[in-house]
Length: 291
Image 1 (cartoon, rainbow, N blue to C red):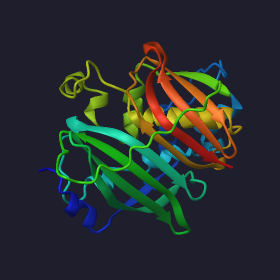
Image 2 (image 1 turned 135 degrees about the vertical axis):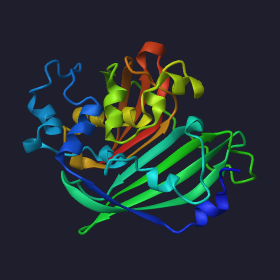
Image 3 (image 1 turned 180 degrees about the vertical axis):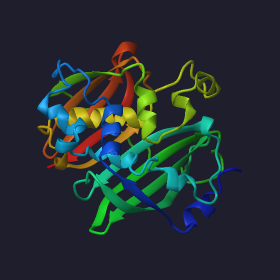
């Protein structure tokens, strides 16, 4: 069996050296739609608030950059663990959490330590839980917790894992906004390090069961956090403490994401749907914890 749960979860932590600079930050921000027109910003390219994502002299770092820092996916170290050997065509991103320990620097060198805390048996699939903890000379920077859904790899007799879902508030959202996903968005986003051909190659997408390439789940994840930061947090990325989601469905380049937000005490709950497909779910169980 390609997944040996006991071997993977008992393996020694793996370490990877990460490095990034302003160009990596700018490319990531462009990949999640920075500089593109929105209902709130019809002329964004020179908008001072938008330049914080695109101009090196004014740059700040959206915390979701942690998922691609160093030129690769945050999951890369965990997926290289002993006992894990899976077909990319069977892999989907199940969920993601980024916990921020302090503001991400525009330029950095850090060490990523990767482990596999758990592998859950969903009978027809396996869920691999990956953790990446990143620190630099000044201490911890962030922690990424990732759930990878692997079709056809369940049935090995393991724990099914948690299945609780977060209900949406029973009231009208405090804010609703929309974000158009450009036709070339996935091609641009993948330059930040997620090279899975599912997001670019039509033939590979068909092998995975889709009629055309789909948008990266982590691209939708970044688009959504940027929308929350810009509309709820006054554009201040340093207010984000953690950000978690479950990838409940897919989005295609060219579609529009509808982002609904419910504000609370130190948290914003979010629902993301595909407006073009009768609000089909894209992100669920989504919460931004913030100051």
